[in-house]
Structures are given as structure tokens and as C-alpha cells.
Image 1 (tube, helix red, strand yellow):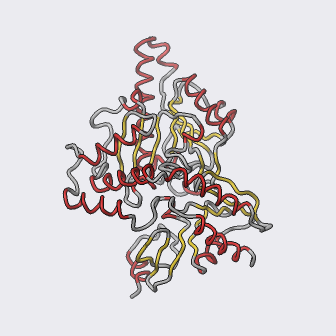
Image 2 (cartoon, rainbow, N blue to C red):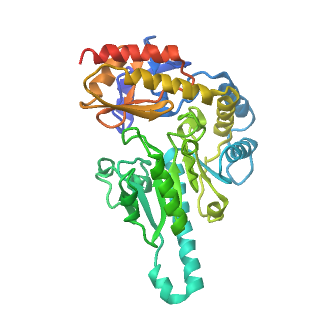
Image 3 (cartoon, one colour):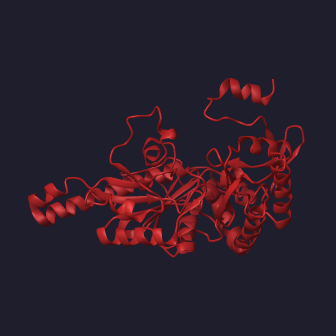
Length: 405
């Protein structure tokens, strides 16, 4: 039996997979079981930041596996400690919680926000008496954005402002409100003393590669400062160099109180992280949250290598430069079905007035891997090491496909 047939027999059908089985990767290319070569513009959905076969990442994994696979978080390990220090030193945050995925990182941020709101309510009750306590009976509401995506656990599914993902999983988590992305008045209309946090992606990924307006994020920061509300950035997809800065918030000059990471952080190994400033991080006490595999030594060793590569190779400047090149190539495409091209760095979306499913399949047939973000947006999130030559090669394949529409 072929791998596909065996997989379909034994694996739950939670994905609509393409009929390809990949067995090897090199640089920005993947190879299937028949030896066919594919130029990868997907990077495992923005995960394989350094592409395939990076020697430093492989060496880091092998060296750590030869020393220690796992201990549990009842003890300290060097790779986890080193990674936490690097993330803090390269950001505006003070503390880190490690998990295994973006959804888990967002789950941690969700719980941290709720705990912050609980302690905020307790403070008001203890300082102002029973009358005021009744006015602030809860401080648990979280504002998320319509068209957002934050994960598939029950809490993060509720945060996700797209009903198509929520169908069949009711009742969802309570006290989640939805505002219009890039509409500050929509957010302001939901603010009261029961709101503890605002959750937002600097660039909506699954929602169609929609960047936030700078004024919108600055406005959110002002609202949060005024009302004592946490500002939480979901940078699961935008973080770790994807937009030309190590963290996307650095493009906007707006500091959140909490930030979540995953995808590119491990360069291909599963890891997630929730970063927070001290005044928020101190809300968590032992037992409030945990993850058995969070901060796994091998995953953290790889993440350390990824961060070192991105900074030591001066890769961020190349990402900006090649991102501009990719944007120029995409905006110059002569296709009447293209409605918009938008994005930052190597995270760009091309919106069509038709569904892009057939475009994706035809590119695959010609050796180019590309994915969608919704029904009518092509998503370009190649490995961060991609060159102009490889960008041109991929766009040439795309042009060939689009010319036949």
C-alpha cells in the first residue's frame, strides 16, 4: 500500500491533504517519494523559517538529544533558560512561558488575561467596598477581532472571529466579544469595566493576510492604558523575523503587554511561547498553568539555533529586501482576477475575485507549493532564506498558471 492509502486508513480526517508524500527537504525545496522537486513558498505554513536541512539547527538538535531529551518542568534545563533569556533580551518583555504550539501559547495568554482580570476585580473590591464590588462583579471579558484566527482549542476557537471554524463546537467559552479589525470605534463601543484584555493579530493570517493599520494598534494601546486593559498580540505567524523585524510589533512601534509565538520559533520543531511584562507575568503562581512538554530541551536547543541564525546572518535585512522584491513581483502580475496585494516582509497575500483552489493545485502540478488564506487569497510565506532567484522562479510558475485562467 502507498503511504497515502495507509494514512487515510488510520489517521483522523482533520485535514484535506494534497496527494503528495514528501520524504526530503533541502534549502527551499521539497522532494516527493518519486523524486520530484518542489519550490516551497509555504514553509510548513510559516514554520520552517530556515528552510530544510539547516546544519546549525540539525547539530543543535542532535547534540541536545545526545545529552538530554526531557526532564519535566520540575527541574531547570540550560536550553530552556538560554532561550527565555534570548527572547527577553531581544524584546520588550520580562518573562516567558513555554508550550508546544501556537494554540497553547494563546491558551496561556487567555488564562493569564483572565487571572489578571480576577486580581484586578479583587483589588477594586478590597479597596472600594461592597458597593463598588457589585459594579465590577467580573472582569473576565476579552475583546477579539472579527476574521481573526487564534487556534483550535475551545478557548482559542472562541477567540477566533470566524464562525466557520466554530460550527459544531458549541457552547463556546463565555465572555468573548468581537470588534471590527482596523475599526477603533468598534473596539471602543465594547469597552467597560468588565473587559480584561484585547486580543489582536498585527497581521490577520488565516483571515486573508490583512495588516493592521498603525493608527489602529496605537489606538488600542491608548485604550488599554486608559482603562487598565491588557493588550495581547498574537504573533504566532508574524513573529521570528517573518515581517523583517524579529517581532512584528517592532514594525509599528507599539508594545503589547503579552505576546504569543510558535511556528518559526522552532524552525520546524513544535514549540510555542507566551511572553509577558512583569506586571502581568506575576499574576501566574505555581499551579495556575503548566505544560508537561513545554520548554522541551531539544525544541529549545533548536529555537536557540534559529534565533542565532536569524540575527547572526543579518537575515532580517535580507527578509526586508527580498520581501520588497516579492511584493514588486506580485504587484506587477498581469491578471484581471487580482483585486489586491498586501503584506509585510515575507508574509504577503494576493486577493482574487475567484476561489484560488485550482490555482494552488495547478502550481503544485508545476512544482510550486503555495497555500491559501481563505477561499480567495493566495498566501506567500516562503522560508526566510529564500533568494531573489528562487522568488523569480516561483513567480514565473505562478504567471504561467494565471495566464491560463
